[in-house]
Length: 236
Ligand code: URA
Image 1 (tube, rainbow, N blue to C red):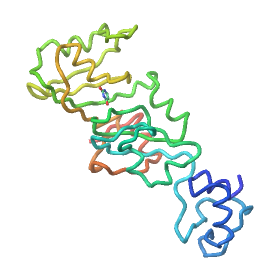
Image 2 (image 1 turned 60 degrees about the horizontal axis):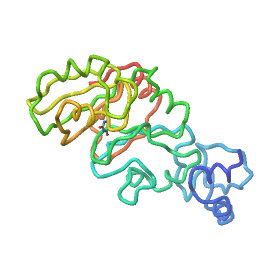
Image 3 (image 1 turned 90 degrees about the horizontal axis):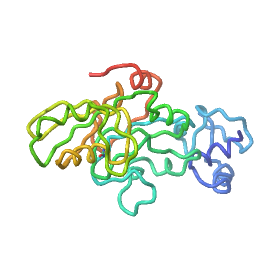
């Protein structure tokens, strides 16, 4: 791929705008030598205005999503992309959220531009546990864990029952739920099915990957080690 197209795909501007950046001498190598549009692509050795390039295609990141942000790009309000460098929204291939969290749900959200990886993460075949902590409006009844684990719970307007899910009581109005699939508003609808209401929902972990000390609104790029932890590992 030509250098000019690579930079355009990373969101530095349209092909035309990026072509101007070359003409203005803003694109150099690590030694400050001016690069040209057709020069061979050596991602790690390219600088724009002296700064290293954004991560190349194959980006995977985790975001600690705060409440009040939607996962959609079309929403007129706050969106999760507002929490990332503005260029990330202009990348081609696009940076997508891996599944979604509701606007008011907080916690671990993965984002990637790698379609195959996205499907591997969301596929029920991967059996990746999605862990949620729910604060409830009413006291737990006592039969929820058994019902959620039954594999027979049918949510309104669905045609197949939910896969068995695990529930642990954390307090009279607080529970941890572990899902192995991701249906629309699933946790909220599960508690609605047992006559309760979720007032706050947080996802601290997917698979072996935990938010750790990543503060709300912060993100970090993930590497191969994190992927291994996501699929196979465990983290404190
Ligand atoms: N279940 C929900 O109800 N909401 C989420 O955001 C995630 C899972």
